[in-house]
Amino acid sequence: MDKHRTEGTKHEIKGAVKEGIGKVTNNPAREAEGKIEKHAGKAEKEYGKAKDQARKNH
Image (cartoon, rainbow, N blue to C red):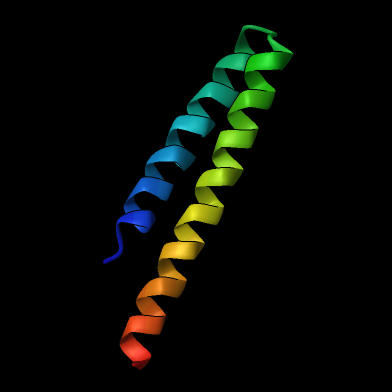
C-alpha cells in the first residue's frame, strides 16, 4: 500500500477533528482549516490509490 494512502487518511481524520473543534468553539477559522486539511487528505489518499493501481497494472 502506498504511503500516500495512509498519510491521506491521517490528514482526513486530523482535519475532521479540527473542523469539529471549530464548530464546537464557534471558531470559523479553525473550522475552515479543518475542512481544507480533510479535503487535502482525501485527495492525497486518492493519489495513493491511483499509484497502487498503476503499479498493479504494470
